[in-house]
Image (cartoon, rainbow, N blue to C red):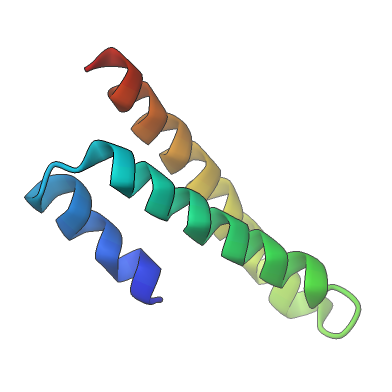
Length: 70
């Protein structure tokens, strides 16, 4: 949750595109790790996180495109 809250000020406030990309990738990996490690114990929790993981992947791609184009 802290990584999720830290991204907007880093990207929009400080205009640190590279570090915001690193942060969103770390958030993506944390959510993906949660999804894969809890699959056997609690499938519903894992399934509920899948759209968030997809959103983070899309956000990372947009962030990377902005980094490459600027």
